Length: 103
Image (cartoon, rainbow, N blue to C red; front, side):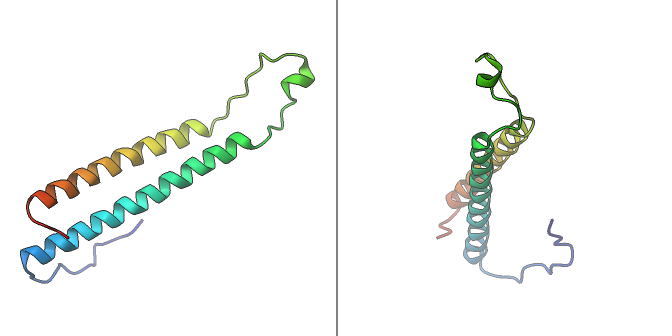
């Protein structure tokens, strides 16, 4: 995790410039969240495709056996949290845009 405690405050700048800087940072955070969400989706897909070490249901003579993993719920929870963060950052960017053009 990054520690910004020692980061000096922004120098005084025009309000438009500071809005543009904030908007750029918000867009960067949104992009990083979307990358993380894609990585989680890929990990869940890869996990779903991997064969289990358990004997297959065909070998046991039954198709009623379901193998549950303990990783997918954590991935799904992390993905939902990131989705919420992404939505809130998008909302913040929208509100910032309403106060001026952060282009």
